[in-house]
Length: 250
Image (tube, rainbow, N blue to C red; front, top):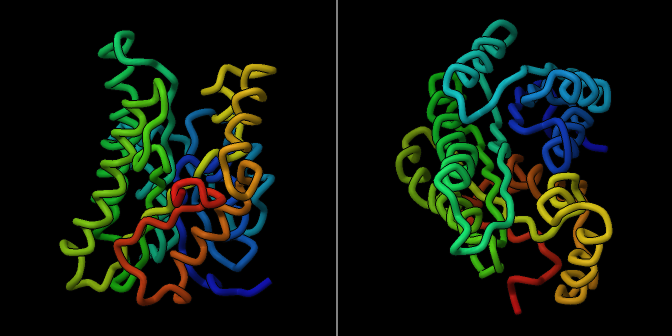
């Protein structure tokens, strides 16, 4: 294991499960001081133990601006600057056109769009010049999925943030990139697909559509995030990196 992030300060939102948890653990293993967020204290405590290393858990909902302020207050108590932000907190649920409710729309866009905007904007005074920002988009933002239009639209917005923010932040040499996972083995995916045999059936179907012949693992997405966050990608800026076994390319 390298120490690409030794003495670096990294913030991972939505870090208590799935891709966020795997990525926080990978950052910590490479020497970073990691701050993770989650909405439930029990899950947050368990995640802190799982990540190990120099990790701090801050309870909060990134759709709530006061919680974002508390996150950065916690960072400032220990550090002067942030080197990496992985704006990962998000989620979605299946609901077809004709059944979409205002609550569904508001919940999805508050978490996936509003939360990302203010997670990044409120970090700007703390972000080091030359820092790296990685946003979690999704293959759903670039292709159609039945009953997933609101989620897909929210993730398309996230991808577009990377394109625009590299212009807003160019004078500070802050890079912004988006990672777009395909179907990935997480609790959130299982919940979105209805759980149990129903979720397994959908995952098996999706695996058959992916050139790699399977769905992804959170640790595989984490490796892509660490690449985008590190100096290994120093001339990569504004991209959408698909980590989907080739699904979006066919």
